Amino acid sequence: MYFTDRGIEELAERRGEETVSLAWLADRLRDFVDENPDFEVPVERLATWLARDDEDADDTDS
Image (cartoon, rainbow, N blue to C red; front, side, top):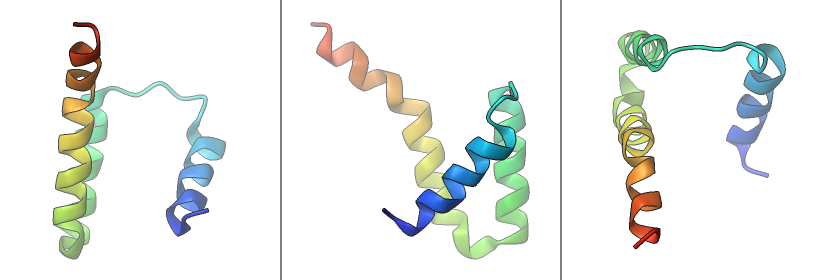
């Protein structure tokens, strides 16, 4: 188990029943980076990965 799994599990337990928009998530990520600028690169990588996640699915259909 990765250290980050604990945070992900807490997120799922506390907020797993909620429905949120990607705009809301983007705002929260911006707020997080504003408060924690050292995490700018990892948040950028996560956001890019999430934005492009469906591109891989399209490649497997061919």
